[in-house]
Image (cartoon, rainbow, N blue to C red; front, top):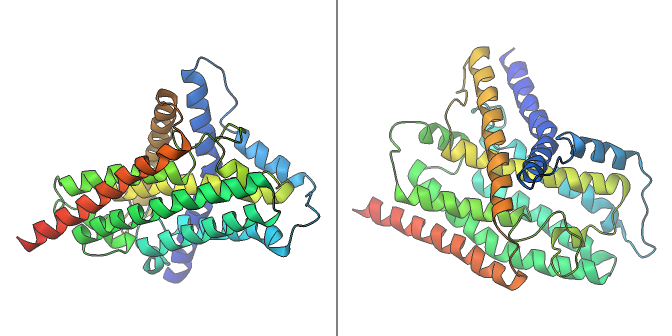
Length: 318
């Protein structure tokens, strides 16, 4: 009975992540529209877009290989698995032993790899430009992400997310400068990885600024739906990761009852709502930067992650 309950709870977390991800994208769009004095589309519009794409016929280029057809499913699978490993409303789930921060970075790197290959597969100029920019961003974002992971791991004594969340929720953490550096670095990485302003504008189709959109221009139908859903899940992953590591309050602990899980779910909804509103405010208040300024932006995250890691080494050695 305990095994069945654990599997059901794990399945619910996986479904919650996939089900709420398009709503988070819709919330960000709605906030940006209201801040610019526009009515904007409904928060549910991303759901309608994905369903409409699923019903459309797939149009493939003549020179598209099997890799072009398989990549959307590989991208979606790797991103969904990575997001499912992040504790949302409860810790200590059935598959929590696999929820390692380094494994999540590796899964996201695999999704980026397939996306870049798919962008170059057809041989269009837009796909090549987008793939090269994506790999440039990834070459800087992944080390910054790993240094953030090392900072958190040195504080919590583990890279497993359930252990990290339990330690971060305890009074032993206190106020640490290294945690503040890790938080800012993770926010910068999240903005870059999700192709948000100021790194990229998800609402534009200008060839001079496109990164993510340039790689998926040749996709249509259910293939494009898989990629769009994977992008939404990736945004949900980073918001949930920031919430569970740096704001771990009200997350249900292992063995907790139904009431604790309901409270954890309500707290998770509040966290992603606040994260969506904050992202909408940030994107409205800041302008898109030039592509060649992105390394400077991500370099700040890299330096903050490195300083946080070094500060923890110095603190532990004293």
